[in-house]
Length: 101
Image (cartoon, rainbow, N blue to C red; front, side, top):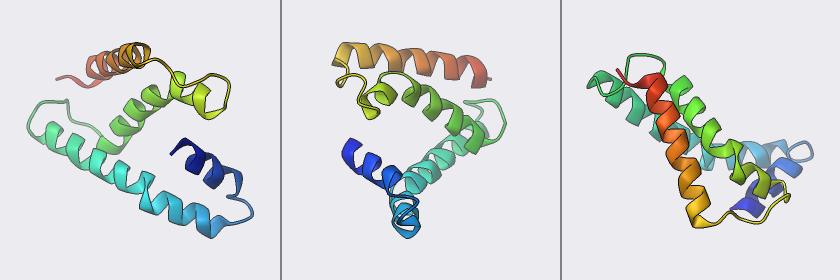
């Protein structure tokens, strides 16, 4: 997946249709599912009301900002499972501090 993502980004200017197709078949679907999940959680009172797309972007941004970004750039090797788990737990904690009712 990392290599496919790198390829889509690297060739987006030369092949914008490929980039659009990659986005529609992958990231856009995931974002739509996340938005639906968060909207439902907001409607049930599990999260405070707000823009579910913005909330999802915030959460995914936190997840991608650490080790995954460094790995994507080739700066570091994939993180150890324990390190990745710690980053995920921190992102979830910060997200809930912002969005818990």
